[in-house]
Every structure is written in C-alpha cells, then in structure tokens.
Length: 67
Image 1: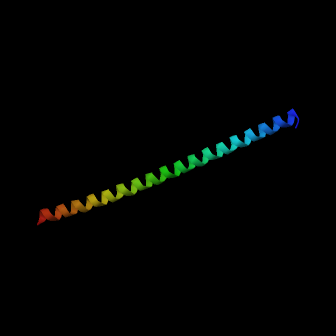
Image 2: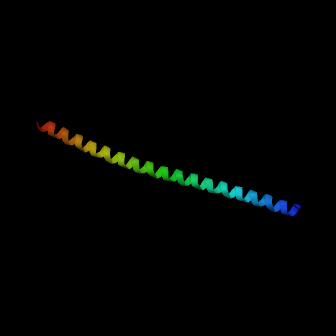
Image 3: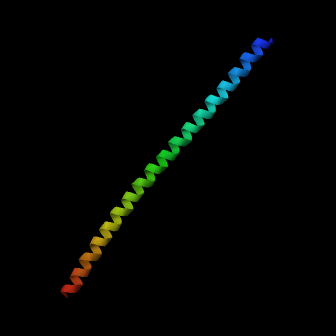
C-alpha cells in the first residue's frame, strides 16, 4: 500500500470508530433518559397511591370520631 492509501485507510478506520463511539454514547443517553422518565412516572404513581391512602386514612379517622 502506498503512504497515501495507508493514510486514507487509517483515517477511515478512525472515523468509523469515532462514529461507533458516538452511536454508543447516544444509545446510552437514550437509555438513561428512558429510565429517568420511567422513574418519574413511578414516582407519580407512588405519590398518587400515597394520596389515596392518606385520603382513606382520613375517612377512617372521621368515621372513628363519629363513633
């Protein structure tokens, strides 16, 4: 191989490896974002359940006071 061809090949390999790294980083970021979204949704559901439980407890307390 001539020096010019070797240089082009090295550059091509370097470029493709950089591209692969960028794609991997992008995939990791997307996974992290999805996990964060899922956690937020889970937190919202937990909060909602806690609010419902608190409401039920209040109702039970009110009924106990009436008795």
